[in-house]
Amino acid sequence: MLLKSKCKSVLAITLITASCMMSVEAINAYAQEDQVSQAKQVSETENKEGNVSRVLDPDKISLESIISNVIIENGDSIYEPFQYAKVGVEITNENVEYINVNGSSFYYNKDSNLFEGTIGNKKIETIVVYYKNGLKKIYTRDTNNENTFKKFDVDVKKLELLSLDIEKTENLSVGDKVKVSAKLNMKNTADKMPWRIGLKFANSNAPKGEYIISLVYNKDKDVYEGYLGYGLEPPRDDTPVFHYTEKGGIPYDGESKLIEVGVYVADFYEIYESVIKDKEALQKYSFSAQKYENPIKNIYYLGDKIKADVKNADDIESIAIEYDNSAFHDFKDRYHIVKLNKKEGNIFEGDSSIINLYDERVCKVIVYKSNGGYAIYDKKDYPNYVQTLQPNDDAKRKHKWVMLDDKWYLYEISQSQGKANYKMQTGWKLVDNKWYYLKSDGKMATGWEKVNGTWYYLEDSGKMATGWKMVDGIWYYLDGSGAMQKGWEKVNGTWYYLDGSGAMKTGWQKVNGTWYYLKSSGAMATGWIDLSGTWYYLDGSGAMKTGWQKISGKWYYMYGSGAMAKNTVIDGWRINSSGVATKIK
Image: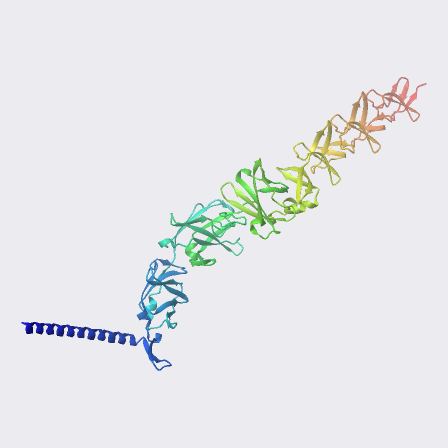
């Protein structure tokens, strides 16, 4: 029994030993196989001590054995013009530190277990593999590795304009704000739509014969929206606004034809890149606009106020004037905007107390239309802007004439602490040696004006008239003070008669019971006068004489009408054809 037991133990030990030997042989065989698979990637080198070591040999490693898969984010929905696409690369060689694809580096992300980076819109021609031991291998695109390079190729789809809807295209004028929306064939995958696109229109009145308006993407509607005009819109809605900005108004008159659609590509700077250039297909989208006549008749800077006189006030919502204070280089302080709102009638008014007298320069005037549009005018549209809107020029003046609602007003200018003070004048004012009368509401008087019971006549220019003045075909005389005269008035040695209205009289006039004759010039006649063949005699005072009159030693007889008698006998006197009377003996 003991022998039998010992034999069984020896057999078991023998079997275990054999099994272990078989496992060792298997391990050695696997190691030999691994050495063979790595033989292509390593080579032997001898160190200073004569020992042999194994090192990585990049030249013996194929690109295909390194890159097993390339994952392009949204690779099936990339449209022209794309700039960058996110890419993940599966790399099987654990010795790789990172790779560089067409100049873009890809680094390992342990969360995704991928080497991640971006590729641009150019065909991949070069891939550089960097190893952890500092070595690298450059692969260029050729027939040997074409399949691996193809994994990075992007199928870029052509961008198309599916629709362009213009709110209205008839009866448009410059400055009108007309909504427009456009839809592209591009899919909004992972919020990758360009944030805005550009529509390029051809227009012969544009500075270079063309201009671009931009539409912003509306994610909810999946369309691009905006207006037919670009105005002075800021680069984007979140940009700080230092300068005057506005958007939407049609910028040019005449016909505008769509000739191109582009995309604003965001890099460090936003760049417009043309993508749709089929002019014949695009030109069906067009519109025409007529000129918008400048509605501002007059506009004036008046110290703490700016006033404007407009045509068709109901068509205007408000007016803005932009001033550039070039003394300040910081945009926040440089530009000042004065907003004018409707005051009454055709007058718009705004607070301009922020404007400095000496440093401000007018940039532009913006008229906001009631229909939502606007029009921009610069100083070339206001030839007299220096006299009206330029505050520093008022520093040289003592007075400023202002026309509002077809009426003139006079403002007196005084200065204090860099500001000009403007005071509307009333009553009599002497300006440049001429007298003017301003009514209680400041309006300059013209024509007849009664002041403190005395009548004055003011020319169309407002200047007070003196001397002889014909008004509506009637002569009046105004003395040196401008006061209208009545009754007898001796002018330059000649007497004239002006009735109660001041009108100069001519012909026969009965004054205080006495008849006088005033020539067509108004001058009072004296002595003999012949009127239609009838003679009359007026003494030195101009009074018409009647009855017997001895004149120059001869007797004449005047009837009650003043007419001289002739060829007759009166009171025993024979009167000849000349009117001379001789006593009958």
